[in-house]
Length: 166
Image (cartoon, rainbow, N blue to C red; front, side, top):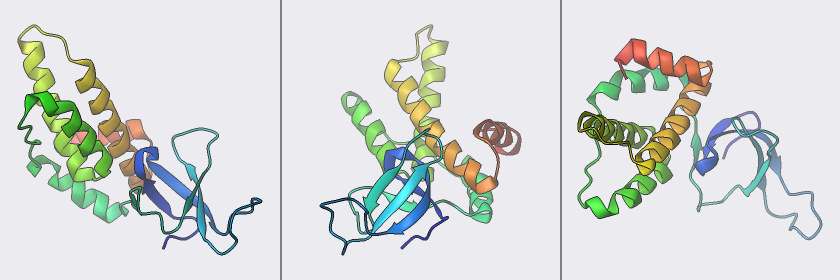
């Protein structure tokens, strides 16, 4: 269970800060069930309520500073995703994003970056799908690392470029 003040990853909402744990104070909602109240760090004017025992959405702690630094050091060794069926590329991208797993997000970003570089070298445009999923993965990964390393997302991008040439 998470506590008030904890930063967690909450599915596609990304990093959220837990502001309350307890029963919902709404009419018609059972007072016996505990809920997290949280505020997304990168979505303005938003508040999320979810049952503590919610298993349908990925909920996990944000990496600690030490874990983030170790992870960054391992990034160069992370391989690309294996896309077996070209026709299912979008589904593979979506599945990767939904894991909310930083390693899988790096795999996805490396895969898409390689594909974008190939297309540009061939004189082709970057596909909308590649651009979309690269941005989603980048936003999610940099959002978590920003909280872990106590910096803003742009700072994370520069930090990664300097530290691991990512």
